[in-house]
Length: 157
Image 1 (cartoon, one colour):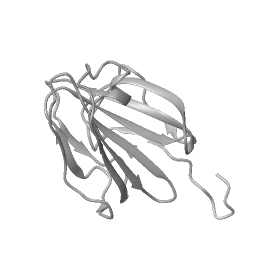
Image 2 (cartoon, rainbow, N blue to C red; image 1 turned 90 degrees about the vertical axis):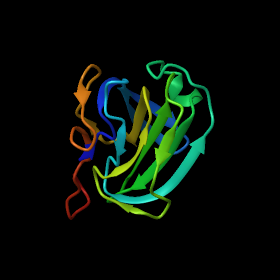
Image 3 (cartoon, rainbow, N blue to C red; image 1 turned 60 degrees about the vertical axis):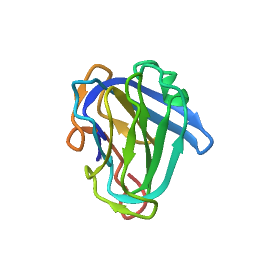
Image 4 (spheres, helix red, strand yellow; image 1 turned 135 degrees about the vertical axis):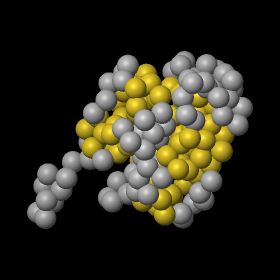
């Protein structure tokens, strides 16, 4: 199971092409009234943490996913990777992320926060089954966003 990295409103669920192949993205908007603590969507090892300078567009704007200041974190779980982005918004000017590359992390474990209005995106493998739709409110570390197919001993799901 893949849990939400933050409290907020699901604003978008899309499929996209990345250099690593097809993926799906779930975007969650955190208003100034939401708790802005961020949590790991899966258990695993942090394999990459990359900070990217950028703009401060309204986090509801889909362009904020690429253009805004953000911290991009990749976690390698049991046979798959999930990437999540802490994206600064119009008012948010401070992203905090505590763990470092190589850290072991538990699903739902607190990893940092984004101050004021912001957004978190979760980029999942294409084969993940999304369990949320736009308009749904989610809670960080508790709400299940998606599940990964199980693999039997013969390698089939």
